[in-house]
Length: 403
Ligand code: PLP
Image (cartoon, rainbow, N blue to C red; front, side, top):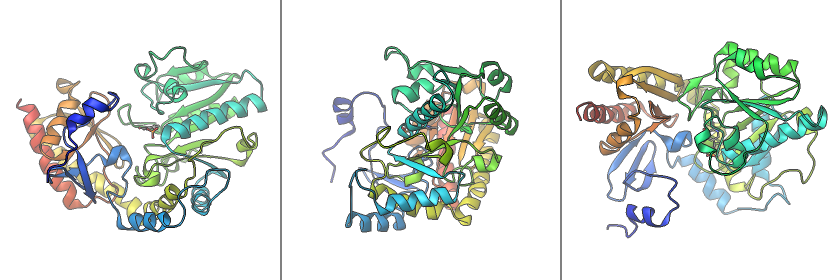
């Protein structure tokens, strides 16, 4: 039976800040999604790198059901077992000693930037507030995070911006040296820039930034909201570079589709905080944390982490086949299953045409800016699903090329 809810309704009643595809997904399983008309799609988008275990993973469903019959919410006036369990897991497997839970990537970053400023102004001097950030970076949509982010189009138009934030080119150590001084509070970066086009930090750059931060008593903040939680083949991407941040933010895949985020830091830095300095009603919600614990255990396993590179290789192999025929891609970018295909200059500014065509041929993909197609599928997508999706995607490419 046709649902009463139509896509047109979106245009009538939702704040017009999104332009979703023309179909409405109603259910999903693994890396397949079905719409209102029971049409089946292969999902290479994974809710923008969120559904790391695909849709409706049986173990996540079981955990969510069980927790939903025990305790939904108590606020932070009380603590709860799932939150403490998830915090323990995060601490055990990272550099961190302390965790702050929130609900979205932006909120985790907001907490990170506030903590950094609180720490450096208390510990060193009141003018140690400068935040160094990078062009093309993305850290969320609250006013502080959008101002730290390196794409002015997202922060323009909302009145005076938070002060003392500078933006410089990514992967350029000389640029960092030029702006780093005793007033610097923090350097903030994504080890792999997600929204900005899937640019990976070079190892020399991260090493150089780390030592500049040490020299100037500035904090190094890694935003691993998109590239963390197994997406690039290790639990967190910093572990591949062997460069330890002072603060790290995590979200998206952390809840496998349930909204949750976390900010991780050390005992030394967290010592400046005390009750009442920062907070959120829902952060550490038992439902989110219970699902987060289950997702964490599955993602942080050798099978899943080691499977990431194998799947990337299958993706790239099939993209290369498409490219031999249609000559649309210039290079493959990103790490693991945070995979980008940069378009040839003749197709610049046409990423959206590829997305629209992909939808027509029943495969869900993403872009990262106007020139890069982005694939952020489930980390446990099957070979068969990749092949099926890529066969459909090849038809979409053919359509765009021959249009
Ligand atoms: N940081 C990065 C690197 C992101 O990719 C995103 C979202 O795409 C965010 C922060 C913001 O996360 P959220 O949309 O959950 O607030």
